[in-house]
Amino acid sequence: MLILHRLKFFDDLVELDGVGPASSLTDFSVCQLTDPDPAQTYVSWNNAGSTSPTGGTYARSWSVFVPPVDYLVSNGQVLYNRAAYAAAGWLFSSVPNSGTVNLARVQAEVLPVLTGYSAESPSNFDTPRAIHPIIKPNRLNFCTNPSIEVNTTGWSAVGSAAIARDATVSVGQIIEYDDQPRTPGVASLKVTVNANGDGAQITIPDLLTELTYIASVYVQAGPGLENILMTIGDGVTSVLATGGTGYGGPPPYDVGPYGGINPASDIATATWFRINCIFTATADSEILQVTSAAALDVAYPTHIWIDAVMVEAGELLSFYFDGNFGPNYYWETGGAVQLSRSYFYDQANVKKQAVNNILARHTPLGILSNAPQYAVPYTQ
Image 1 (cartoon, rainbow, N blue to C red):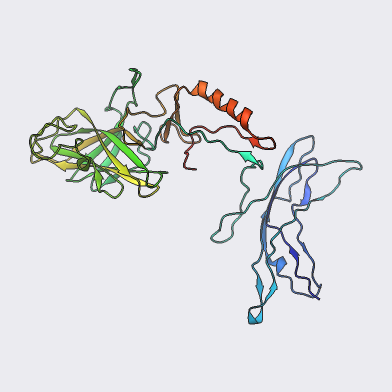
Image 2 (spheres, rainbow, N blue to C red):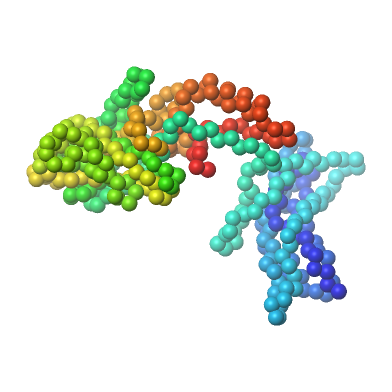
């Protein structure tokens, strides 16, 4: 008589001290010895062949197991059901009499669906019943590489344009709310315009769909341009569509960031203008574009310079910032300086202690609180 109850193993991650196991896991089942056993058909990868060091140090042993699906036979009947449980086992060799081995931080996790089989490795250990506090910043600039200080990573040309980092041109000092001047950097993105509509673009990641954002860009025009346009998302939202941020429509030409000039004339050169628009994210990533509109006297090639790009939640246009602005400003944790998103925490040092005090006093018994995480996207 066949007993259908099965124990098979999914995934076990083990920390060992003292003596290493001969094998991370052992598969076993209860069945007649003459039965074909699909439980033995899984594939596994592991590092169980290595021996754990002695002397009070820990080594990590892990295995990945792929159990089979239900074993179907004629008439749609199931000969073997896929196991609902897993059991972990360790086999130790050469353990001295009265010797001990310490096991710590046992972890089982489900791997993502894979396209084909390949060797996998475990994720970092996650303490059970633990709080993972992610501290939301006061402001977050979602634009990566916002002032092009290192290279042009993330930026690409639009149309027949060419892009390059220009260390001879930058937006210069920006005055903050505390009246302190800040300088985004010493470089900008130089866009060589070879035809009408040429420009540059960058993808803005990790947005929350249906949330309202405001995007702003500092731009400078070369000769022969009557307009510099900004669009984000599907191209419908642009500086011209928001009112008061482009030329402002028909005469009189007395509004907009370009000095109230007639659109048939050139934009002033050697002058930085800040253009902006409000948009609602329709996806978790949107494309921000800055493109050119040629005047009647254009002679190609001409240029656009782009600097101090910012995308943040809300509808209020506030001062530009990035992680280089000093205390309370951070580049993204784990991200590259100058090339990642930027975070602002008002009075960071004082309020970090307040967060620690709250967690220490109000975390329930039996639950651990991991260290608060700062400068990581709160979309996670």
